[in-house]
Amino acid sequence: MGEVLNFAPLVLGLLAAGVLAGLIAGLLGVGGGIVMVPAMALAFEAMGYDPAVYQHVAVGTSLAVIIATGFASARAHYRRGAVMVDTLKIWGPFIVSAALLGGLAARFFSGDALRIIFGVVALFVALNIVLPVQRRLMAKLGESVLTNRIMASIVGFVSALMGIGGGSLSVPTLAAFGHSMHKAVGTSAALGVMLAIPGTIGFVVSGWDVAGRPPFSLGYVNIVAMLIIGVMAANVAPLGASLAHRLDQKRLKGAFGLFLLVIALRMLWQALA
Image (cartoon, rainbow, N blue to C red; front, side):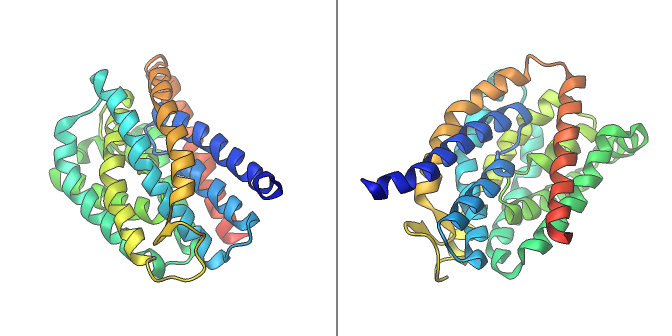
């Protein structure tokens, strides 16, 4: 009985993270990895696992959960006509290939290097939301298929390394390319699924023979954490999607811009402090 009680705070924390991740996934078109990765990292740290390993496990597990949260969110947005199928066809092959490469290369990157990369890129794309000149430039570039493919590759690679569904990068990029915020959010949710599947495979392969992983892990993917967070997040994501369509685009853009700015600064602070 005592051992069960010792795990109770861990389980409750993962359940709470799942609810919050699901809301964020549906509301902002992101996979919820921004919440899940730090939550799982803290949980694994509290359990005493190797810090050189648990960050990668948190990232890999987050990608696995995003398969479920992203699908639930994308389906809800698709029913509202907010998923751009033509964009999926252009971005899909490149985001899938880049995500697989990112997952396989994960073991060669330090945590601080990943945080700096994400922070810098996130600050850049945030400018595309708040600066009209930047939006006009990106809207013109968005007409180019080559530009779309390049951005898809960057989003896929960086997002896989960070354990996120790519929405933190793809939503502002698609919005800057001239698409409505609602369609950017909905399409990003679908792209997150396309990204998370190969990214998860990459983390399973790259962490297969690594020592010091938490029990019940396949490579860098922990099955227990995946199930607890995944079930909660997948069931809550449609609620977030419903809320997104009740908000006007100006407020949604403002919320996402603030969200992205906070996350970017937090990443850079952790890496440089």
